[in-house]
Length: 383
Ligand code: C2E
Ligand code: CA
Ligand code: CA
Image 1 (cartoon, rainbow, N blue to C red):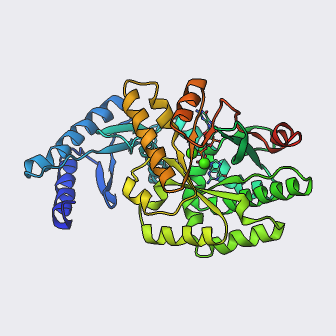
Image 2 (cartoon, rainbow, N blue to C red):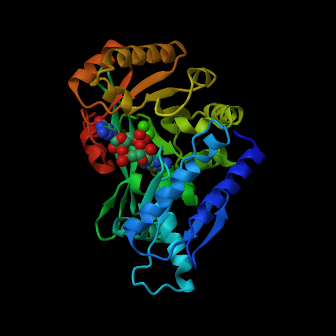
Image 3 (cartoon, rainbow, N blue to C red):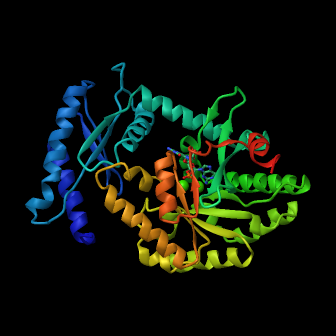
């Protein structure tokens, strides 16, 4: 935003401020891009906090001093060598701990400091455990398919179901996707896991067809990394062909945030998917920064309105939220796009959705996500 030269100058000025604050035998280095490391000779958290605050205040003031209208925020992650016997061999460990602590504050809108602590340590070791166990989890079928029904609001019938992954560890503990999907997205494993879930969805479709149950589409969540694979559409077609299920029986849920970077490439993949018969749904719509304009430039089958819309209906902004949701649904409909509201929890919400002609509802009011076998018993056996 400021241009390279100004930004570089700011980094240099920040370095000067940090260097001024150093005492005997302490040091500073530039770690990477806009990250710096400071080594203090104290283990007193109060002293550390105070010294860091002074530095952060001084650095935050730099743009104003240079007559630049820009607010600088600094985030600090701190690791302490507890036993007081600091040696250079510990630097690697401490840097890692400081980075873990830093990750917990980086989203703030203010100067912030976080100390590496027991909770971060536990989270870190859990993440490491998950990463070590993920390959085995696929081969040992530890990822379980849970299904949540989508209800046709006009007829009351089940329209379809969304697959939601649960990781059941060998000791029986169940881990929810929020705990491992972000990790899998950063280490790339989500490609494998999502394809595994697609395969499970096909297995279910095959089974239901063989048993003569009424068929309906199954939605699967697709991560950005998978969606951007060169041979994405072909890979999906190979899987559906393997189980001999029609591509039309799968709805691919793609996160709203996914499309911002490259709309033409995104559209091209969507067109290819739809030409192959798959249905495409935009998930969590309204949670990100998609403008109505980009939404109108896409060929979608379904739009899933984020849960936050319904949550907002219980707040002071109620009337505006309701109007906006009604208009969004009307717009989607005029393009021939099916609409789904997520997170339906009350009858009042359902009534409202019916009044604005939303097609489908999904939420705890109808059912929590349940194991596939239970879903089959509850919704298919008698249909
Ligand atoms: P999502 O796709 O938005 O899925 C809906 C989430 O909302 C699910 O959480 C579901 O249990 C929860 N939910 C459903 N109805 C209600 C309701 O009435 N009220 C409230 N408060 N919550 C409701 P879950 O299963 O923990 O999944 C969280 C997220 O993890 C999903 O959000 C999805 O983004 C991701 N995810 C789940 N399975 C997969 C997968 O196989 N692949 C990928 N890439 N992501 C997945
Ligand atoms: Ca979803
Ligand atoms: Ca969603």
